Image (cartoon, rainbow, N blue to C red):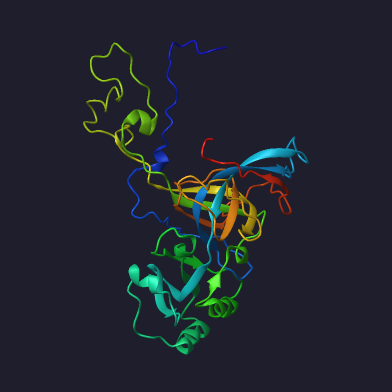
Length: 336
């Protein structure tokens, strides 16, 4: 039966879990945690969102009714130029949380780094850092990496971020960090095809919006005396204050969001297989380096950084093996 109560309203679509909805401090998302892994590697990798296309693949989901058949799947193309490991950072655990003990920076660094940070002039001894690791003064290791957007002709200023290191022991983590310090790391060194990852980015900004668009409240009846696109009441007489749950106008978008359990369908270089559509991606252009095809949509606008990491909450039914793609669309996105 239909709705017999006479109400034409629907549940409001805005989730209060994302409050306060204010602008992000930076267009680079912050990952405050990462998964654990027995494999010694970087626990994440950044990329730049190029656009979307679609593929045809053999459905390998274990419980799907279309298993073994060819299905249409939308994918997001993320260009992932190699990152450079510019420093090793050691942490110790205190009652107030983690605290930085020391850092070791690479000898030869890109001049583009001077555009955004002041590089340390004082050199620190690698032997002293290694001694702190051996004695247990340093309990956790992370690396500082910077991107190379100049390789894809996106911009000159690199983006600097920090990533954890996988592995079961601190000694093998330190040996790995010493081996990659000052060197490039590519995306296929971190992820593999078929991997389940989390993707975080800052969403597309929409500016100052009203409560109807921002929170999904119902437009009022045409017989109201005032405007129709606002809440009917901001609260009762008692308590004599406006609750934080009342839908209000304000900033919409440009907030950090994380998409969980996105599957990597392909990792390739442009020299191997080029999936640039005819005429290039809208507002982006052509691919020039490594790229990743991620199933589904990702937050953020074109050219925005997307940070991929190992999934924290793995799904119950995970397809095994490498996805089999039979077709990748390279048709023009220009609308012709």
